Image (cartoon, rainbow, N blue to C red; front, top):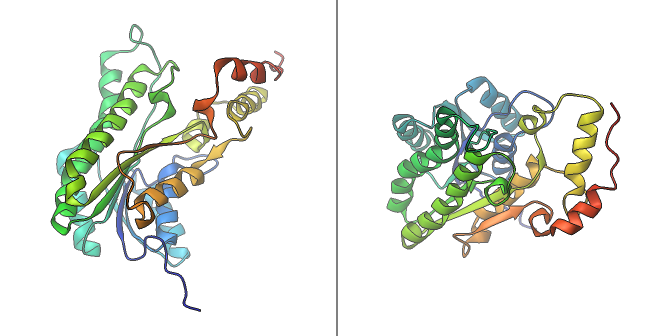
Amino acid sequence: MKERAGRVENKVAIVTGAGSTPGPGVGTGKAISVVLAREGAKVLLVDIHPDRAEQTQRMIEDEGGKAKVFRADVTRSDDCKAMVEAAVDTFGTLDILVNNLGLASFGNVVDLSEEEWQRAFDINARTVFLASKHAIPVMARKGSGAIVNLSSSSAVRAGGTVAYSAAKAGVIAMTTDMAFFHGRQGIRVNAVIPGMINTPIAMSVLAAGPQTDYVNRLRAESNMLGTQGDAWDIAWATLFLASDEARWITGVALPVDAGQMKLGPLTMFNRLREIPAPKG
């Protein structure tokens, strides 16, 4: 029997934010990079913290995959241009771009500073704009490519993160617009909308103790499956959208949230009120 090739065999991918925030678990950038490499892609691991990306590289290379670390601040156009050039110089081309970078900011329009508003847009939306700006011409010249942008369920749900929510909603809008303008160049553009997944950066806002367990139970019960997802769930969805299996899918914002966004408020309220709050 002929051995089955990987789902992105011999493809070249860039993943931004490819390192993982220190802490238990795995971040989305690391998980996406590892899954793409496992399925045959050569991956340029882009991060402003190269030491974090090097951990991802070691994991990939220990499994026999190919990856290279590239330090870049993807809020800067010159760095994004250099990032794309590095992928082409190192691996020969560019087939896949995963715009993974994101950082939450808390506050409403009254409380949030103008600086925090701008920072949220720089990290969550500007990075998608600049990375895509420099990647698309390379893909267009060869007549094929796939871009996957990571948004958030906060883009379509209230949660006290006005700047983050607005920026991630902008990512969905950019996804639709890029899919329209570049589809005839053979480039597909889709987004993934993660739900309440368990990652180091998500858990970093919670102190260890009964409150952490309580919040994790709330997060798990706020969807249809009653479990928490993790970065690997996001990685498998990203792999599918980046692969030729999704060759006729573009302009889509795919929720990976165990049905959370489909639950009505009464259903969610009845489930959550059954969980006793910690004492003290």
